[in-house]
Length: 581
Image (cartoon, rainbow, N blue to C red; front, side):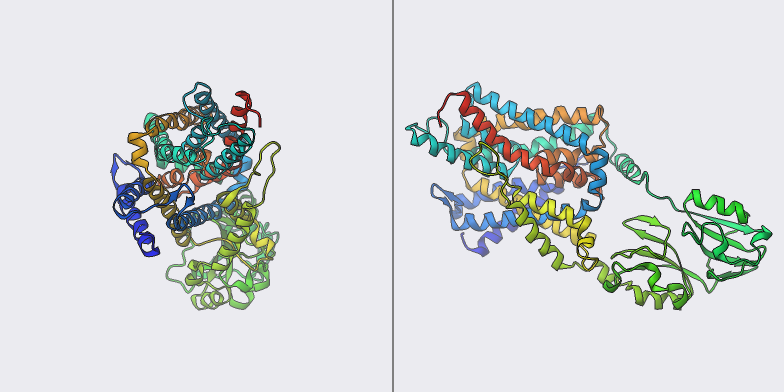
C-alpha cells in the first residue's frame, strides 16, 4: 500500500466518497467539501487495518507518510494561492473599510481559545503536550501543530539536560499530533456548526446578504448612465461633437447620433445640426449639465436594430497592448468606430485617450460590423486567450510565496523562529501579485486567473488537502485512541476550545457589529486558518468573493498569531509551574 499508485487510489476513493457525502443536504444544509475529511478518516482506518498503511512510527514519517505529507502541503499551497489571486484586487480596499473590525473580533477569538486551553492545563485536566496538540487541532492549524511539536521537543531537551523526567512532565512530542488528530475533525465541525446556527437563529437569507455585500462594495464606484438629448440650442448648431460640454474633457461620450431617420457614428469632427438626437454616456453629474446645455431630454430610443450600425464588446487579449494608452490605438480614425465605455473587473469607466489597457478590459464599441471585426483583430478579442490559464505567473507566484513563507521571524524567548509557512506565504504573495503584479512587471505579465481555472485550482487543492488529513488521522489510530485512550476526552475539550470563542464572537459580530453574514463566515474560517471551513463558506453562494475576502483579510495576522500562541502557552505553563530551563 506504499506505492504511488496505491496511495493515489486511496486519495481518489476518499475524495469521491467525501464529495458524495458533501452533496447530501438537509433543508439546504450539508457538509460540502468538509465531507472529504471524514471520508478520508474512514479510508485511512480501513487502509491501515486491512492493507497495513502506516504513515508515522516512533522514528518519524514512513515512505508513504512522506508522500502523503508532500501532496497534502502541495494541495494546501494551490488552494491558498487561488484564494489570494481571487481576493487580491479587492483586498486592500476591504482592509481599509472593514479590516480593523474583523481583525479585532479575531483577536478576541484567539485570546479566548488560549485562555480555555491554559485553564484546562492549570486545572490538571490535560498535560502540556496534549494541551497544545488539542489546541492546534481545535483551531485546525497545521503550522501551529508543527510549531508546538518543535517547541515541546526543544523544551523537553532543555529539561532533560537538567535531569527532569520529561515524559511525566508532559513533554512527549508524539502526544502532540495524536491530540491534534482527535480535536481536528470536530474543530472543523465546530466552525461549520457555528455558521449553520447563526444562519438558522437569525434566519439569514443568503441572497439578501450577497446583495448587501455587493451593494456596499459598489458604493463610491462610478455610475454610468445614458441619456438621449435633442439638440435645440442654436449656439451648438454648426459646432462639432468636441464642443459639447464634457466631451473634450473626457467626462462624457457621445456614442451615437440620430439625424432624421439615419443613425450615425459620431466622429469628433462631425458637424451638429438642429434636431440631432445625441446619445450621451457618462456619470450623472456630468451628463446632466451637458444635456441641459445643448437641448432637452428626448424619449426617442436610438436603437441600432435594423440599421447598419451595431454595438458590440471587444475584449483586450493582445499582450502587446498591455499598458498602452487607449488613444494610441486610434480606433476611431482607423476603423470608423467609437468606444463608449471601458469595463474593468465589472466596473464601467468613461474611456479617455490616456487610459492604459489591461488584460481582460472590455471595450463597448459602436460602428459597422465589418469595422468592429477589424478592430477586434487589433485588440485581440480572443475567447481562447481570455480563458487560457497562464502557467508562468502561477509558478513564479508559488516560488515567491514559498520563499516568503520560509523567511524566519525571530521572537525573543522562543527557541524556534516564526514563519508564515507554506500556507501563509503563497496567500500573501498571491494577494500582492494580483494587485500590484502587472505594475511591477511593466504590464508585460498578468497575474489574474480565469474564473474556470481559478475554481479548478481551488477545488483540486482543498480536496487533496482534506482527503490526506483524514487519511493520516485514520491510519494513525484515530479510532483506537478515540475508543480506548484519552482521545474522547481530548475531543470534548477541544470542542470547547473551538466552539465557545467562535460562537460568542459570531453572534456578537453579526448582531452587534452588523458584519455581513458571508464575510463573517469567511472571517470565522480565517480565525482558524481553516481551508475546509472556507470551502464550506464559499459554497454558501455562487460568488464566493465575500467569504474569501473575509478569510483573506484576517488570515496573515491570524496565521502568525496561531503559530505563536501555542509556543507562548508552553512558556507560560513552564514558568507558572516553576520548571527551570
